[in-house]
Image (tube, rainbow, N blue to C red; front, side, top):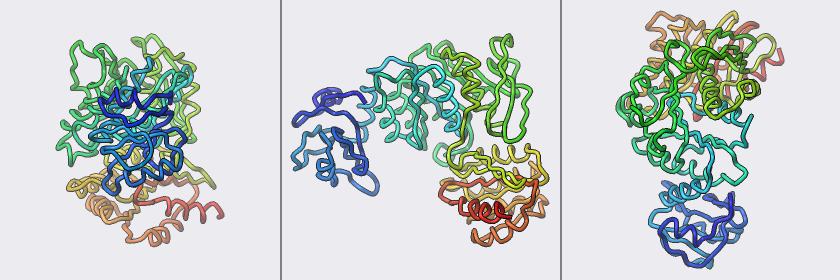
Length: 457
């Protein structure tokens, strides 16, 4: 972050400043206080950071942002709502920089796409990208405050649960280019329908100037309906509906945990071979989107391809691990019906003797949960998966739906230990196993047990 004075912060927010200070960082957590930071006292559902103001001062904070003046001997800027003020201040700070800023959202794949885009842009620019899950109204401002005068491009991911959230984020970020990966059913409980989700996702245009490009997945049925007239040029990428798409993929080949394909662009007059070190058609879409962003921002095509080839999956996000002739796909960072479909399709497309799905609950689906888990069971059968193992209260509906459609090798367990006792002896050389669940289900407990036993066989 570039230095900013408390007086300037107060001016930007139309707020009152008590005392003066030079601010060189923004912090909201006393465990991460840096010397010279502005400590923003956020009121959360479980805590009120105003209670930690004295601790922030002791650890080196230069000033506080508060919603009422505190009896702490430290400069303070006083605002009505610290969370809203932080978002507003991040926009003021973002406007100090003239650079390409990619804003992206979507129901599935936005984080992997963000990683791909950052790699591609990194081939030409010093690029800032969203870290971890900092994609909401608290996280996005923290990312914007990491801009400095050495930054040459930024990739900012935007998530949401309700209408209006992406609108507010986009107005803070002011993207110069936006990307929507797809429209699924995540958060359908809050948004009512896929039409509602489309409306919420297209709020990403709220902070964009007219004439800035919008990149869309041309194979997504909902995104195909987007018509913006002359306000924003639409650029499309596709694998199936290739006739009118600007960027298309053909000759897709998966082998040894990698996917190779050819990108056609420039009205079909240009081609680029790409290899990504992961599998699944959904990752072809992600890489194709990133390549399109790179082309829009003048990244050399071969440099973009080389950057994509260097991708390393994060944590348990579509990470492929092979040992003793067995392939395990760890995909337990999050889960929704859309991402379940992507994982099961990727599993079905892999080479191998048997395809095994180990699944657990998709969380935060509310009244839609039963129907969503039943739909996953239907996907398992549709993709001709050989074995299904599930854990979790709602995951029982996955097995029920699979059995209702004739699948015999479908098993549900009340505990991970019982699941492991059935699964591990079954696994043999040539098998491919996908592990998929919401992060809160901690399916890595099963993964680690499989590795502990089978790697030593």
